[in-house]
Structures are given as structure tokens and as C-alpha cells.
Length: 76
Image (tube, rainbow, N blue to C red):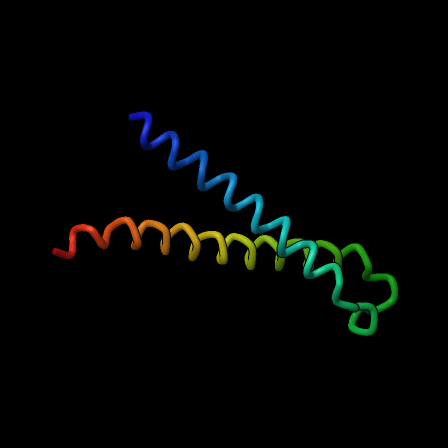
């Protein structure tokens, strides 16, 4: 039972870390020319959603790769 809880905790921390890293990278990109006047709030929300999707996707890949590497011992 504690293994499931530990896996959940590691997954949550991984997602938050990769979302933070993605946020730092996305904020360096200049989106100002693409944003219409009066639509700054919607653009910020869209950038936040894009950050969450990319960060969670990278985290999921990282966690799956970690699991696959642990499962290699069952190959032989």
C-alpha cells in the first residue's frame, strides 16, 4: 500500500517540477506580437494551459521511462 502512495507522491512532485521548468522556458519566449490588444488575460491563460500540457507530458514521459528501466530486469 505504501508503494502506491510513494508512487503518487513522486508523480505529483515530478509533474510540478516539470511544469515549473516549462513555465520558466515559456516565459522567455516573446508572445507579444501574437497577442491582440485587449486579449492579454486570455493569452496568459492560454500560455498557462500550454505550459501545464507540455510540463505534464514531459513528466509523464520521464516517469514512464523510469518505470520501463525498472522493468528491464524482467527481460531475462
